[in-house]
Image 1 (cartoon, rainbow, N blue to C red):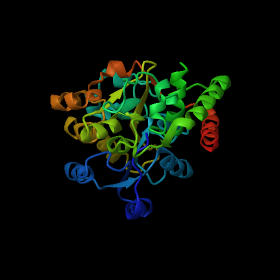
Image 2: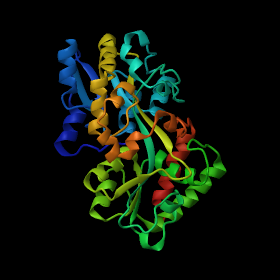
Image 3: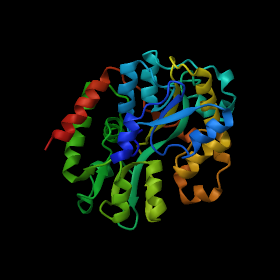
Length: 345
């Protein structure tokens, strides 16, 4: 899913830095693993790895497709994009014997519909999308996606929605009881109609600063990934998170080894190192996302889940939500519809 994009010199460095041909090249979102993870991995395993950053799934996918994976060894991408890499023959078919720490994953993490049995991807983080709101500023607790799409008058211009194609559309798909992977033309037309109508009460489309808008009081209700809502909760205890009655999508971020990697053993070593309970727990403790690593989650301080209740959603409950999957050729229609929604008056 979308992470905070880099800015200024950091972005220039990330996009222009070239790793040595002898280096294991790992591409990830900024801040999605411990700052010292690469140095620690190199020390622990006697490898030479280098981290390059991507701002979005779309950015890294463009590079991987153009180069057929050349220049990369391990990439972090969301599950629909991992599916595409597999279909294009860019993702490695995984040898689990080289990933002993994969045993740390919950059994539910082997049942993900984009890749049952984790044949070509390893789940790194997972979660839900719902409503994040200021309980002290809203009269009634929101409990439906329609609260976002057709808010009461007092919330006009106090609502934000996610800008990324799949999640923007998912709000209306879920509100109408449709699949978040629907390709039905009539359903997509209704989704488009509802989202154009919703623009009349919208403050902004916002993937990156929506929780800050809640903290400042500029927004009262936002569509949010659960982990990002936690960033707001960390600053203001009156911020709450709820999964609407109609449900949520299940999003999964994964690690994929590139089939053409010239450092295959080191790539396996890195993924296995990340699956160590201590290393994987860092993400849960610092990024405030749930990780599918049973050993890592069991090591969390209970106070963390008390402060951020959505951290306690069980793997079984997560699998009860529909996972975002690759919609194939329909992705063109998805992108076109989102463009038309954003261009509409």
